[in-house]
Length: 283
Image (cartoon, rainbow, N blue to C red; front, side, top):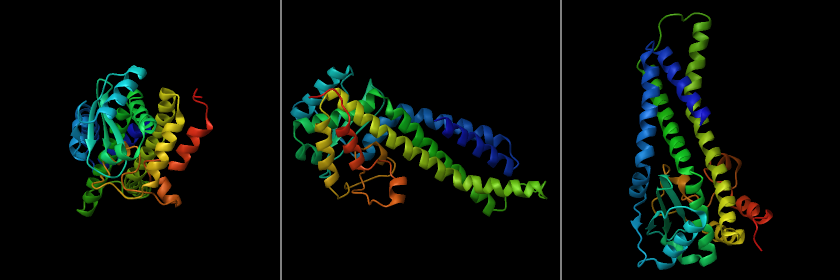
C-alpha cells in the first residue's frame, strides 16, 4: 500500500511537471482519496451487481447456510450476507468493507461438486478473507491500479495533442522529460504487478487461516483439487472482480512463466502443497 501511494504521488507530480500545471498533483491525490472512499463504502454492492449474484436464505440452501453459520460462530465473526451465482464453474468469493458489512457468494457448480468437509474448507477460506480484512486491501489496490492507468492515459493523450513543457528543453531537461514519459508508461504495469503479488499473498494467507479455522486442511486441499480440475471459465468472467474469487474465473491457467507473473492467483498445486505440508493442529 505504501508503494501504491508513492506511485500516485510520483506519477501525479510527473504529469503536473510535464504539463507545467502544479495543480494536477493535488487533483491526482484528491481523486485517488475520493475513489478509495467511494469503493470502500460501496464495494460489496458493486461486486454483487457485477457478478449477478442472488440472495440465499436458510430455506433455499440449508447446508450452505448452516456451514457458514457454524464457521462464523467458530471464527468469532458476524454472519455475512450469502449469495449464489448461477454458474457451473466451481468458485466462490468474499467481499465487503469489514466483517460487519460482508458477503460471501458461491456458484451453483461449487455446491454441486463439493462434499460437506470440502465446502467447509472453502467457506473457511472466504471467512478468513473477511477476518483478515483482505477486501479493504484488494479494493484499494484495484482502485489505485485503475487510477494510475487513467492518469497514464491522460498524460499520453496530452503528449499526442502537443502538450508538455516548452521550457528547459536542453540538456538535463530533455533527459528528464524522456524519463518522465517512460516512468508514466511503465507505472501502471508496475502497479498491476504489485496488485497481483498482493492478491497471491492474500490467497496463501486465507488458505492457512481457513485451515486453522476448520483444523482440517485436507478438506480445503481436496476442494482445490476439484476446483482446479475444472478448466472451463465462468460464464461471465470479469477482470475487475477476478482477484476476489477463490480460483481464476477465466479458467485453467497455462504454466508459462508470464502467466504466473500476471495472475491474481497462485498456482493451485502450490496452494495444495502448502496445505498438506504444514501442521494446522488437525488429526
